[in-house]
Length: 628
Image (tube, rainbow, N blue to C red; front, side, top):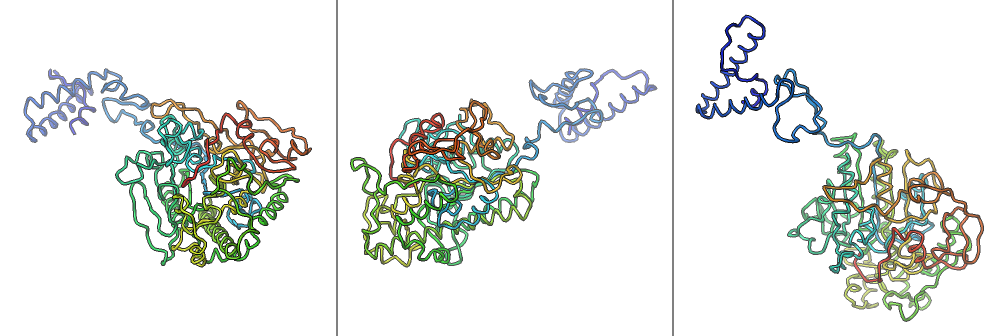
């Protein structure tokens, strides 16, 4: 109270005026009366004369320091950025709230929804010609863009680190999954301070930020209540988190985290629980809370379901949709889906399949080999087909949960200015071994599956009684037409993944295909570009590493434009000619042969990974078995 009075007082004058006739004298008299009231009040509160003198002196010093025209000085820089006026009388002062306001997002900045599935090859889903029906993704593709040459790192944690920072996974110190950290800088499994996340940048530029689902960028030693939690989402720029830490979790009985604490799941499978549904429920809750409290504030939601990572847990009614659809086997599926991909323009005409087992014997890994379909017993064919049915049901069910989020955005008028990225983190998973598994943990521990035991669980696949994963044959099939699958960064089967972008307000093209080569490091630059926000040169006092990716925005309206080079874009002059080794797709900006796709075969992608975008991509050194 005393300080408030001091600010409005005139300097203390111990000499009484000779007259109180003038207006100035009357004001001074009133000021002294006010001072006497304050001092009397302090005395009544028990403040002694020495204390009163000290307070008066402090008041005198602060007012005198102001001078006749300026505010008092309370220390170097305390008024920095303040554009109001601080006068001796509050009635003559002008407030300025701008130094204390949080930064607002640029005008009309879009909401951002990134949907990142796990372990999904390009030939899995319906928008790319696959047999797995994805109504939500198809809806977005029909009204947006489908990319055919979007690449990842072939592993979970590295890809996700790139989507967090826009830098190469080695720069992020994620050369491998978190469980593979080795004590060297490139694989330390902790994001360096020089790599601010997209969450941190958006959060500090007026966005609400939410992370729902999988987080596989926390070191193993921190995946506990007693860990430092320094790498958990709330410490990496996210307002809220709901999901799980690590490469995988049980879809019926998950290990759940909310914000900075472990929690029990809200209800059980007997009551209809499934993780994909729960994640959508929580995402919708966050979006509704944000809209009800601050509807003008844009948001960023990273939605990372457990699908399609094993265990492939599917509600029975969704798995039943695919009964009999995979009975012809994975080799027949490859032939069928390649024709569909060519018809849809995903692959160029004349593309041929790669061998089922393309690796030379001296480098091939036995557990990653594929058994020809005609070599299987009738029981094995039944088992393997059922595993594919359950996987397909798992994927479609999760797509339906994403659809609930998209429907909400549509119903609330937010869909038009929400840019959606719908994608996967790496190719199909080969971690089911050649024989498939009802318990994926056997693969991780090098324990062989037994056919007789697996057959006993045939009717329980996808239920809480199993931890199932399909065999390697389906991994190759769902990665058609490429060689190999997840973990193999030198092959497109591990790195070439589906991506659909949808943004009605910002993309006029509808239902079109884009063949420009892009990498996972390009997602963050694209988000910042459309939001009108720059990655800071310094973040919290730390000089930042430059972004390794480029914005994909140039491709939104021009199918023939090349990726930016030194900040510019160039029209494509690719001829509509083709040949056995060096042909170009009529609408493509890069040689298909550069990634091993020609009129003869489709295969190795190492050329494109190392030459087309060598400054932004680096392959994982060796394929390793991993929970990723």
